[in-house]
Image 1 (cartoon, helix red, strand yellow):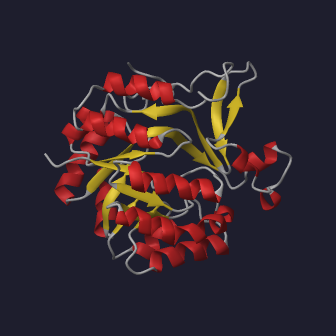
Image 2 (spheres, rainbow, N blue to C red; image 1 turned 120 degrees about the vertical axis):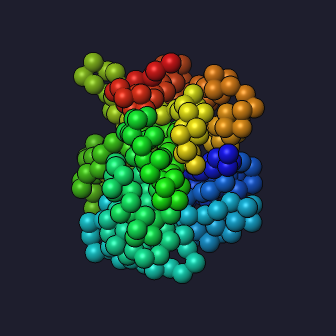
Length: 309
């Protein structure tokens, strides 16, 4: 069986540029991931902060033997966002992951990847995207085991690699407006980049005070943190070829080591999960905050926030 690929998805959150740069430097120098996705995918207004770092980060990652893929915006609404997408897709020698139909249009006919924000839910969609040049597709977070198995069979027939997200808060919805800005009494066009105050997203709570969702600019994510360490052997068996970790403000180098260890069967999923709990989100925010719980409900055909032990 071919060695499973471990990937690091694009950073979803608005980190300080130097924090963003140093994170990927560490991924290059210390992590065991095989492929790294770069690019601002949530808010085009953030793009100018990170663009000066792209060349240096790319060179550092490639020198460390990592494959670099650039991801496109997940929502293209304005002329500026359209130009950003067109320019990225037109760059020679760059492997691009499409996260929006606008990018799919400009990548047609040449090798590319398809990201999890494109709804690849069935065999017909998989075949259509492959016929347009997609060689590698990352499936959405909400697909259950049965759907993944069917798509894996189709991907094998098409000679396409499938990737599955296995760690991180799960994106659930997008909006044309920015609730993150509105929550601070600002509007999207004059947000003053307030989202940089929340390195793992802004938590929302119910009227009873229970954590419910997380906001990241125009994006709504799960409060829980996806963790499919226990499901990795089954995913490998069905033919999934790559597994994606989503960056958070934890020790992502150790997180990657834990997933790699389970994939290589050097230690158990239980041991990895126990260590991931110790690294968990909120652990550094004081005794009043418990670690963010793990979830794997979608995989098991249940509510996504649930944990099936």
